[in-house]
Length: 121
Image (tube, rainbow, N blue to C red; front, side, top):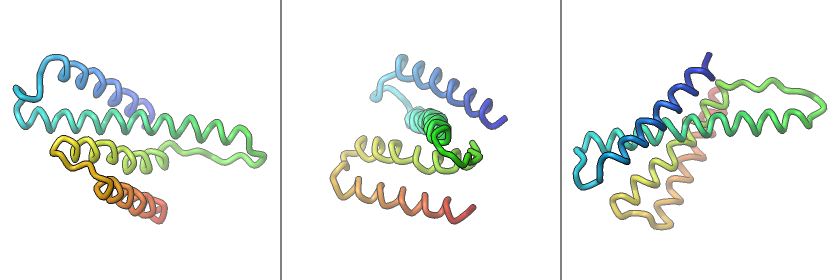
């Protein structure tokens, strides 16, 4: 069920983001429209990353002798954390901050967040 909902949300985010980027420009859009672009970008990267991680996990599981159950929900938790990184980097670049220190802080945040998800199990 989670896979179907996530696929629909990803497809919807792709369609809405494509339409929004084709119909407006950054100088003419309202600030809420810019927020909508970031939210749709997050939802799109969340879905793509979740299914990418699921495919990689299934491919790796095919080569193991001892098969392990792959749960989409567990990968969804990791992907929800990791999908925030591109949104933060694009957000920082949009205001002119994209130095090495800023990227290092985003990576540190991602490591801490993934550690939290891992310990949450």
